[in-house]
Image (tube, helix red, strand yellow):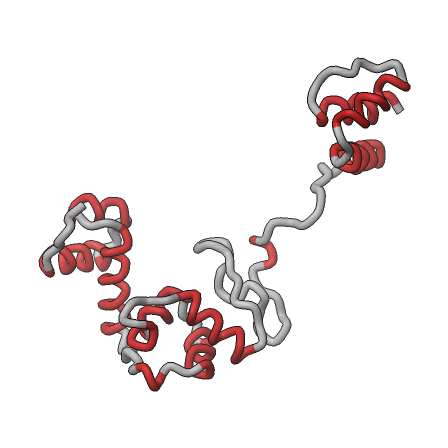
Length: 190
């Protein structure tokens, strides 16, 4: 990667992105690292889209909330507001401003996993199909026995290994193995 990239490298990267080339190909062809290429390409894309870069005094909590509600990603908002954050995009500072203004959490998932408005707008959740389920997943159709066994083994694995060994010994089961193996033996012996 080039330590001192030229404007020609950046312009070539932007043209490749406009042509639909993937980041990996752009990085290799233009000898840029991802951060350099992304920042330049995103800045150019925002300029071409008609977004104006905000001066430091224009960056308010309400303005950040307005940009987020316009479906801009945190990274793009940070680029637009970089004059207010020391000349470099500062996503965490922008997120804090959004949280203070909107009362919503700014937490999002990675790109492609529903990062925009994870918690929804006006309380209506979006992208919930992309979120990981909470709790212990139990395979469908496995029945009550499996559910009890999974829940029981999870409960048992929180015990100290010496406690698991003594419970196995009381039931006449082998006392060697990992905590998970001991817990499994106790569940299946019940």
